[in-house]
Length: 198
Image 1 (cartoon, rainbow, N blue to C red):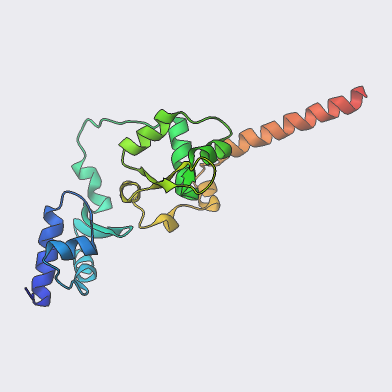
Image 2: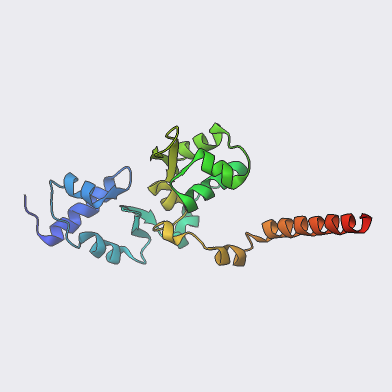
């Protein structure tokens, strides 16, 4: 079956609208009987740009989403907020910035043991996945983020993760840096007390 270009765009639009989950271009093409998508996805994304619903790409998957500036209109009055534990937040950040990583590597970076349940919570949320096994002793399982992680945090790819300067500008590193500076001051005070007593 050969479709004219505007028919391809209409078919792609219908397929994505009805899809239960974001789809890759290959999945869309297969769904449409192997149709050549050409520039249909980019054309549709440009068509929907700035509208109430936008066609966006997250990783290699495409889906429709509410325009970010209108999302507040669709929120329910009562939101069921599930907060991640500090351990889960730290593990997620480590995986996002260092993927693929093993549990032992996560623990080495965090400096404390990571409970198995911590990674299970992130997998249940759909934000991380098992990405295989590391070549080496014991062949440990390694973890990576998912397209759902990118979609949830509004990222097109992992390259869009904030850098250290952006985190500092947002004030997210201030508490950490204050604690670190306090520890350095305490160590300096302890060292000077030892020098005085010697």
